[in-house]
Length: 364
Image (cartoon, rainbow, N blue to C red):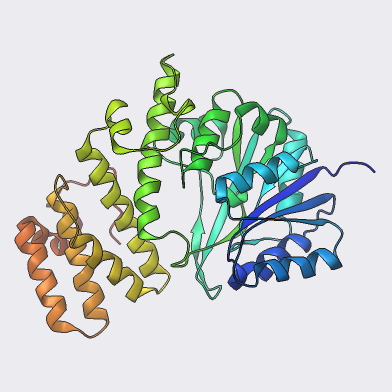
């Protein structure tokens, strides 16, 4: 029996809500020469039975049940079991477009030097409603110039050479919730990488994606993998090579002060709150904003705290809680009086009374 060209790898834990749509989006691909490896990571809902039913009806699916090991262990297991030349990642809450694998395999076969290939995504909410298209840098040069600052690959769009995955040593267990970013950085140090301009996946935004606790861990992991990549480029041994976790003191030793750690955490949580608002999950966003404002905000820049109060004000106002909205707005102003000028900024830009900066959006 010949090996398939592509091994699609998915890890899933308690993912019954969106699982059928994700699985069927792979089984319905126009490209057919693939195996579908699913590591069922000790789910307590109906995930296991759903997967078993698909395995019985389609020989391309291979389901591996295990006690809960976590995402990183599960992904490493699935990727090492892969028989294909290429590994295609897929998450249990996303939806692959039917020509995703056709487009990506065609590109990789024409560009055999590329080790990792991603693509653009369409954001959708929990109900599948479109929230807009998200593009990424496309060429190797563009990606590598951005990669030290941010992750420019959507994990479940990636098709990669198994050879590159094995050569890099797979996902590292210490960098929880940034394991993919760490892998792309390490692979990109030795191989060219690329993204397709075309949308290849519907990426779902929903509250169960990443909890507040995981957001903190994800941010610390992100800072760690960026610092470790910088050290490797300088020829300094990678402190994450032997790390089992990412405690704050390790980040301090890597040159990341506590003030930066805390501000990055708040920055990422504020971004997550914006995503929840975009997806219409306003109660979740409000709860997250309130929770972070009640936490220890030492070292956090005042403009970030003011922005959180302002977000709370907008959310309360949108829910008809006008008194709470006004009080939150007042707290934003008291925290940073300069925030009062924000509503005037578009007007001042239009009248050319304020110099435009490179990051400003054009005023229509």
